[in-house]
Amino acid sequence: MTFTTTRRTLLTGAASAAALALAGCSTGAKPTGTAGATATGAGFTAWGLTGGTSETTFRASFAEWNTANPNAQVKAEFFANDAFKEKIRTAVGSGNAPTLIYSWAGGTLRDYVANNKVVDLTGKLTTLEPRLVTSVLDTGKVNGKLYAVPNNNAQPVILYYNKDLFTKAGIAAVPQTFDELLDAVAKLKASGVTTPIALAGQSVWPELMWIEYLADRIGGPEAFNAVVDGKADAWKNTAFVDALTKIKQLVDAGAFGDKFGSVTADSGADVALIHTGKAGMLLQGAWVYGTFLTDAPDFLKAGKLGYANFPSVSGGKGDAKNIVGNPANFWSVSATASAEAQASAIKYLNEFMFNDAYVDGLIKGGSVPVTNDAEAKIKASDQADFLGFAYGMVKAAPNFQLSWDQALSATAAQALLTNLSQVFLGSKTPQQFADAMAAVK
Image (cartoon, rainbow, N blue to C red; front, side, top):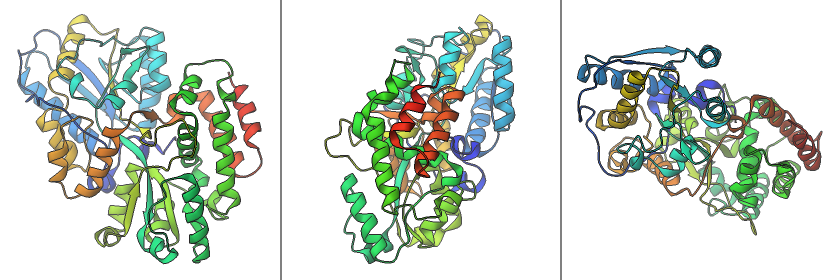
């Protein structure tokens, strides 16, 4: 899902301060950030994105490091999303990357690894690694080796629903299966709701969430993993056609109404359909909770927003606890940095990432760190119910699939979005989608 850069990567402004950025946890020991020997020799550099809780947390953490390590200072620069993507691509390619490289992992990380641009961190982060949620940590691995570690929060995709509309339509509980989802659509329509499920079709990327979850529930993570691995005929797996066939069932049933092609996500129009009572359900990322909190605080206070994991599919291979979305953003260590700079950066990652101050900073901004011991802090937060739900969702997930358009190359991602949109709009069949994607190189 190529969520708009700000929504997809870092929650901005009030949305980020107010809400979530989900998923987190942490196991055991909590380094204080000043533990261990002071680093000596060269300092290191880091580039990150402007805006949101993550930038605030990064800056505070780097300042903490600098206080403890006067002889090995970190120098950080922050850039707007689009400017950063162009700048980092050029810097990495020319061998002038910062020591800490910020990324979304996925296809970009695989390219870095293939071109020997980042350091193999396997076995070098013995303090940090055991504390991280396994499903999130695994996103930073390539061929079983660790090349990137999460640096902020996870953002799973969640099924939101309007409790009042469910009650009015006689829907006793949130759908647990795809058949129950279809039944809920029918009941909402019968009760006068013309848009049972809000969908920002004009933005296109929200449509990805539907095929991601359905393909997982039907074929398990193996189906899309084969695509990522470049296996021959991977797109011909029947899980994709079956998933799209179910999407077509929803479209034909009027699940998304007849105007979803004009709804945008950037403006929060899909979220507004839920809190204004015009739509019953919404499949969106955890980041939109901040929009609810900012735009409809009374709706939340009244307890009218429900949230759940995506339904299962009868006979499917995928675990119903699997989730999709953005596991987190990541730090890698540049292979072209000096040995001294690499050593300082690795020490920083091992001892300062997700220490008590780091965890507190993320939660204060409405985010939950991707560690295994954040439960107590979550329970004490103002948004304990939602953050606790998302925390449990991520921690329990056997597999956390990175958004497909981030996992694939830029060329394949664009083809994916184009072909998927055509299926939703009815101009391409599920089989034509699979054939078109199989032809992408």
